[in-house]
View (tube, rainbow, N blue to C red):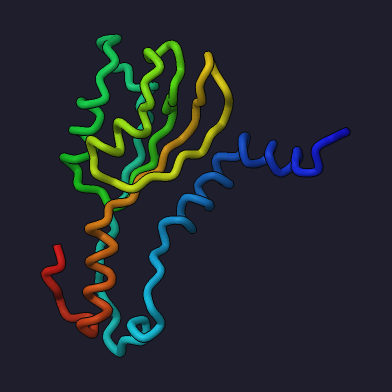
Length: 150
């Protein structure tokens, strides 16, 4: 019997636009309504980064997740979209790159699983930095005045 959700699953796995929309919706902070009606709009810069990590393997053919985390951390992004991420795949020694990169960057994540591959999963990873959401909440509480929430 055909799966009623198979067309939806197909779109989710094959559409980068769908994955990007879901990631952006996930990134929207939930701010209490009492703090969302400020007469002074907050001016906050959003730092966004996208990075095709090629399953963690550099041009030197070495798997090095610390090097990737260093690049991300050096840029101090608020949102990061990573492409070509492995989770438990044989070609990358079965490493859970998602958990390792989340630990190394200290960022929250959501993983968009595109396909099963070599005993694991392959897809896109989206990070968000907690410090950014603290700045948004702090700025709404101070009526748009600059706040030192970091």
